[in-house]
Length: 375
Ligand SMILES: *[C@@H]1O[C@H](CO)[C@@H](O)[C@H](O)[C@H]1NC(C)=O
Ligand SMILES: *[C@@H]1O[C@H](CO)[C@@H](O)[C@H](O)[C@H]1NC(C)=O
Ligand SMILES: *[C@@H]1O[C@H](CO)[C@@H](O)[C@H](O)[C@H]1NC(C)=O
Ligand SMILES: *[C@@H]1O[C@H](CO)[C@@H](O)[C@H](O)[C@H]1NC(C)=O
Ligand SMILES: *[C@@H]1O[C@H](CO)[C@@H](O)[C@H](O)[C@H]1NC(C)=O
Ligand SMILES: *[C@@H]1O[C@H](CO)[C@@H](O)[C@H](O)[C@H]1NC(C)=O
Image (cartoon, rainbow, N blue to C red; front, side):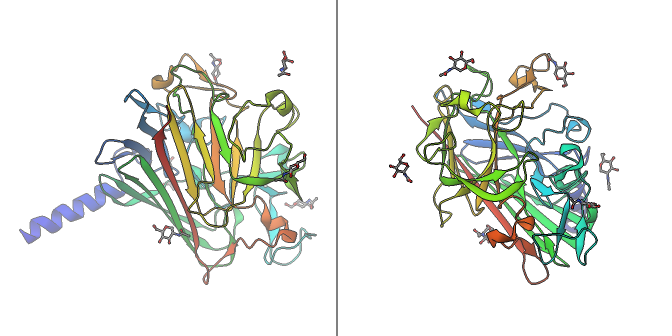
């Protein structure tokens, strides 16, 4: 018996680390009460489907994605559909930083690091470089019917200092709850700033084609002011009396014409970093709901900020379940809501935000997504 048991354990351990089609092996987790089912692939520790019930009791898959998950690697558009993004999410000015951080970086100064610049014609780094964590082959270290944990070892990739080992755990619970937690350790001092880059459409393209009529609440009074390369100037925009004010819930398109050019020259809509007002993470930072499906999402997080991107640049064939592949996900088909740190704080020392982790300081990132119904 014992021998058989260890043999089974060994086989399942092997099977668990590298499922068929790894790194595109699919793991499904479901809450016992049937309220929520999520699917993931090892590649990027990425969520590929998320099913919750609408007001009619019908399950809808409320996140964007591909039917062929290998497109997470090969789609040249790289919309970043629902993975863990790291080692440093969002932008890094000129792909450069120093440790300790400084305002006036000397490119060839001591302890200055250069990451490949893959955004705005080489003016900045986006989402951790050319091959950030979202395009790495994570491995499963444990799983059950309600939870899966992936590990990624970042071996000083993309020019960042030190080895970072990250564990990302996705768990579902009764009552329509999804939790994602990331714990990372580093062998040397390094910036770490992660996000989970989920694109939501709470109607799942049934009864509406975009998120413009979704209601949005953001518990935030200030937005990071950015320059033409979408990197921070160091200043904040006070949301009061502006198109950024979602302290009282509003439809995303409540002042839509005023968002022309807001996210760049030809871009309409939002792609901004809101700094949360909350100083305890028990209160939802963001809420999103749709009258069409009746699905409501409340996000609680220990992140100090959130990026909200209304997906102007999307043009990718939809999943079959969303009406694809003949129809594409296009502008405003979804809203990406990314729990994160202050963007490019490593080049903005005046904020006094410490994003340097290392042997004496582990990194942690926790977000909880709670689903309910509005009638
Ligand atoms: C940007 O970084 C490069 C090195 O990657 C350096 O040569 C260049 O001078 C930097 N530009 C600015 C404006 O600091
Ligand atoms: C990661 O997976 C991709 C896609 O299968 C493969 O091409 C690549 O060689 C793998 N990389 C590593 C380091 O295993
Ligand atoms: C917002 O601005 C109005 C004036 O336009 C002012 O009366 C109000 O107190 C301000 N609210 C906050 C929260 O700053
Ligand atoms: C928004 O802009 C469109 C096109 O320019 C115009 O037809 C519409 O009346 C505007 N809506 C509002 C509320 O100003
Ligand atoms: C969908 O997007 C793909 C990739 O950008 C593009 O090649 C194709 O023409 C688009 N299809 C439609 C129907 O717009
Ligand atoms: C994050 O979640 C982990 C695992 O559930 C927990 O141990 C840790 O205390 C949480 N951290 C914060 C800051 O909430």
